[in-house]
Image (cartoon, rainbow, N blue to C red; front, side, top):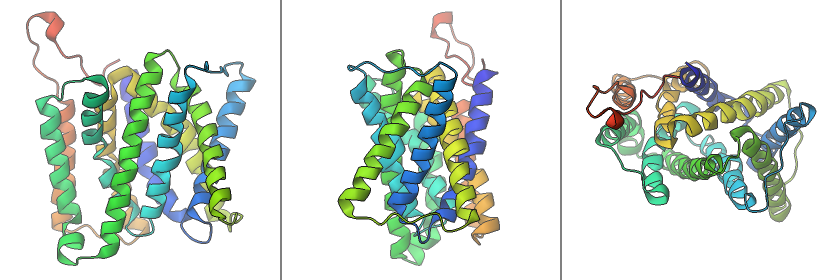
Length: 304
């Protein structure tokens, strides 16, 4: 039951963060917006852990992989996603992000020697086909350069996200709790973003209105502190490949919100694409028949 709760929470939280990101695109530079997000998230998470006596300091040996997680999950990936939101609707960014399953399967094979199972390939193929149908009219018929930019940035951001998953998996194996890794990772990410602001001479623009502030608080507290904690707890419990498939359900929430607030219109082709991504999710989490010997049985993915 715990895994199911973590999975559902991650889907609902991250499925709604894309529209909040879109609400922040405007007069505040992207670098500054991402800095605000993780600086506030770090203050909240570190503050809560310190007040409850649960703030732990990783050892010097553990610090490099905390830094990798920080740069991948709390810096580089979101710079890509925020810039992508300038070119394509936020719901479509979430669809590209659903390819995290493919990235994680390949990276887990490269870094940890995990086997890429046939069901993972089938699920990934369904998801990729659905993605092509969702984006097809824009990138192949209209030949919109902005769409290509948005897709490229979203894909690069998803790659960084996957690298962060690998670092988180390694950190969990070393006994670092996800909430501890997140607290320090968000802090390091905010510091890195502040350094980039200084290096590039990016002006620090204050939040312009209540809409921006509301989006910032939601992204920092719910999307970052709560969302990343539930997701990385899921990674530590069921593995990076299975946990990443939560991203395939994001488009259901994100595209619905995008159709309401960003004038995104579902076409018959887009609906088929969305159905295919959901079919991939069903393949990934379908209960397999019990085999002999008992030690060869694959555990149910979403049972406590």
